[in-house]
Amino acid sequence: MNKQNINKVKLFLLGLQGRFSENSSIFKDILVTYSAGLKEFKGKGIYEEGSIKYNFNGKTEIFSLEELFEKITEEAEKYETLTLLYRERGTELLISADNKNVKMNTTEVKEEEDIPKASVSSSINNLHYTETSTLLNRDYYIKPGKADALLKEIGIMTKEGKIKNDRIRKYNQIDHYVELLEGILDSLPKNEVINILDCGCGKSYLTFVLNYYLTEVKRRKCHFIGIDISEQVIASSKKMAENLGYRNMEFYAMDINSYEPKKKVHVIISLHACDTATDMALAAGIKMNSDCIIAVPCCHRELLNQYNYEPFKGVLKHGILKARMADVLTDGMRSMLLEAKGYEVSIVEYISPLETPKNLMIRAIKKSDENQDAMDEYYNLMSSLNVYPALYAYINEY
Image (cartoon, rainbow, N blue to C red; front, side, top):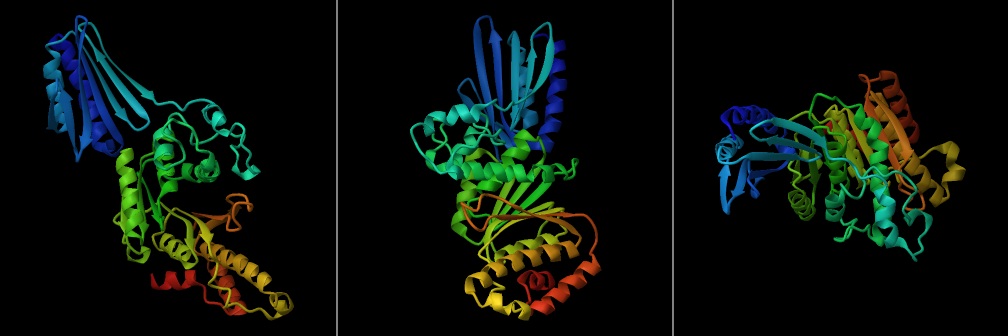
């Protein structure tokens, strides 16, 4: 290739260096092809601890990205054409050059159309499920095809690319989770890296799904922190992130009350954290002044033995009714306190009650400063019911 066009290539590569410095956490690899006559010579660079491990002509070396681009352009002088494919999660940039032209094209990796029905149809033939276990007649947010690597890693899909029969229900749940959060996520700042903290993350399936959706579908810069008391599940989550190449994630085995954020946390999520662990997550979101708090509570035990309301004495003598009322009061008072702290709150049904009775999702979006009138109303209800909720306690001692 002539030097004039090699210099043009260098200008494009300079732009990629800037892109890499900002988006290295979603960089996948670089594929290089030189040609001379009918022969092609291929190289591949992959990320390794901030550098690029590059293999060309059977030799593997470690370079900074700047050093690698220097080597690639030096090598280009020996050949007639150069194509360089720079791949990120969700995006590909192709530079093609010869002695006549140099051009660069950016392509978004498209979702496959109508793949869910086709890809799973053979998996469910001749089988019978309840309504809540079948593949739903909907346009899925997490589509097989592009999302295969993710779906395989979290155990939804077989190695052959079929949705597992016994995981269709879980697939429906995680996809609906994304659907319920999409509008909220769209409202978050567009010019910042969105930091999302998953409290009691467990195996982090939904965190991985949100990571995929935000990064590769919505094209948003994001970073995820997963916290769980179990060292075993944290080790599992770290391994999954490594397998998927999701470098915009970090995981810690610790108590949520011990976590001190080093940067702004935009979103707090908590899924089926047991009893007052949900309150820990909500309190963390309030104290961190998070833009958004999402929780799917579980195991409402705390208020059951606390609350008492004389006008309802005849109703609450029945244990099952008292327990159900405790569930309602727990989540209702959580929403009241969130509103008093300046959040706009909605409580929606996350999944069908046929799946689990613990199926409500609390969605809270920060809208204003503390509302003293709402706080007074909360205090009055605490007094009337003779309760001291964990969320209130955690906010004042966290």
